Image (cartoon, rainbow, N blue to C red; front, top):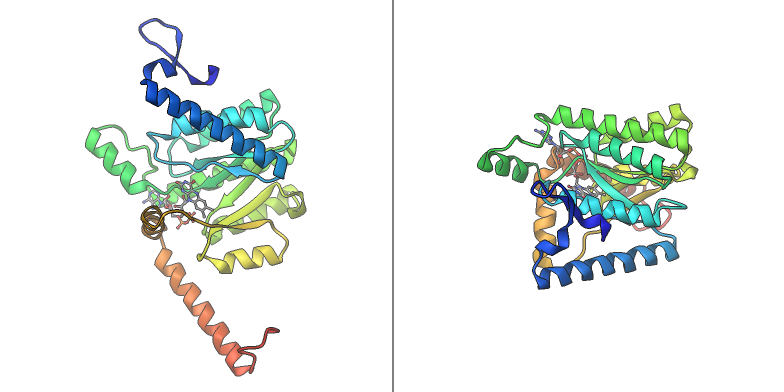
Length: 273
Ligand SMILES: Cc1cc2nc3c(=O)[nH]c(=O)nc-3n(C[C@H](O)[C@H](O)[C@H](O)COP(=O)(O)OP(=O)(O)OC[C@H]3O[C@@H](n4cnc5c(N)ncnc54)[C@H](O)[C@@H]3O)c2cc1C
């Protein structure tokens, strides 16, 4: 595939990446491309979106490259394929703007799930061990700034082209409020469904439910799979969600006060609470 060519410093030419694979790896790659194709076609036919997760920075260029190819092919009429951008990366804004610019030039619909990023410790440790520059923003505040800067750029793009779409995948109340405020200022209506929100199942229902009730497209991300894969995933979320325990306490307090309210109102078991 033309998508899988790399610049060779020896020959000064673009050379196929596949020639560097063993026969088995070559087959694996082809099978993966076929599966991606099947998934993207099925998503298109079913009228749903397909979100590709972001992983560690040392895999991400390959994931982004393949996702971009899918966006070129499948995002002609609407955003079917969504790529994920991690705003804890120093290069996040550059990545977002380069890809939005490309979508504009080539005429396809840009779709993204915007996250802060889940592998901070791993990234910092690896950079320190191997001795390259830490790819992560130096502070939490810088990551917040980056998140809002990228989000603002995409919201502006939605305002101007009505072609981009974004999922604000975050449990951060300030980011959700920031999005709602900017949507109002830019005249982006929830019913256009260009902006959606996502939280993990079991977390931050106090953000998800009011958004849903107010008519915003909002989703619960449901991790599933073998226990040995899902448990490390969930424990990473718990470790890396800064302020997670604070939020869990807040959720517990909210549930407790609702329980008391229903108890004293005599409607504990009533379906019409
Ligand atoms: C629907 C959904 C889908 C997701 N998909 C992905 C995905 O595909 N790939 C992925 O990597 N993650 C994904 N995540 C996880 C996400 O990246 C965050 O880890 C998680 O949501 C916590 O960030 P927050 O915005 O919710 O809240 P916050 O608690 O406000 O932010 C915590 C995040 O801030 C950043 N941070 C914390 N401390 C520092 C510091 N000292 N310096 C710099 N940055 C710091 C880290 O990214 C940390 O995870 C997803 C989350 C959701 C809700």
